[in-house]
Image (tube, rainbow over all chains, first blue to last red; front, side, top):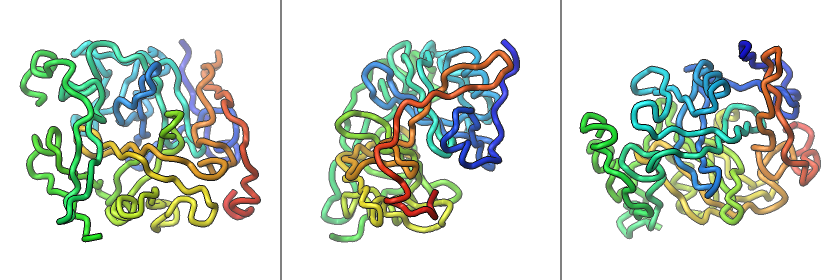
Length: 152
Length: 152
């Protein structure tokens, strides 16, 4: 495949309404990407891409992120097998956020062993002001056996 | 309502697996929030909240963001009428991202007049390397009449 080229962002109207892809990378060189299960529409995770990882995603058809903690390209599932096959990529009006509809391979997206990273929801604000969460997903795999103990 | 208190983040295991809400605000004091239509599961927009706007969201049950461009609290729909009634709030494993399932009032979420900000998807990588988008949503309202010409 030829080199992928992103369009320039000098024309705001074109960025917001046009049909050329001009992703905005922030002051750290990153764009936010939300992976959603293409079939169930369940949000799986929110992560970041840099220009290289976004181009890799477009080239290979699998989600490639940039790990802020490890400061490196992160081809999701390369070691765990929990690859995300990208079905569709949406961008928003100012092109600084991406939605990836994916087929999640393996047992789940989250390093804690759940199918999704969004496995808790706000349940209530307790009388003393503390906000309580509620578990909405159990573990679908043993994270130790997939990632090893070091990642926990 | 009493003052809302967010839990501290000193215990990583508690943050990742526990049932207390300990949102992580980044070095700019912001957390990423994705609004999704509670009924259709269509992603509507991605925006940011600071601590105050997140507490306001929990208190009033409507999405209150922080506008990075205007550098101010942004109670979505306060002027346009396009309020987002919050049905559920999910947090992810490291509690640095939120999913808001909302009922979108009015004709849409996007300042360009579409029901969603994610109204374009990647269609193809052209032979010369340019990435082409495809329109997936038409306008559901006239943005000039809702926001005035200044916002366009």
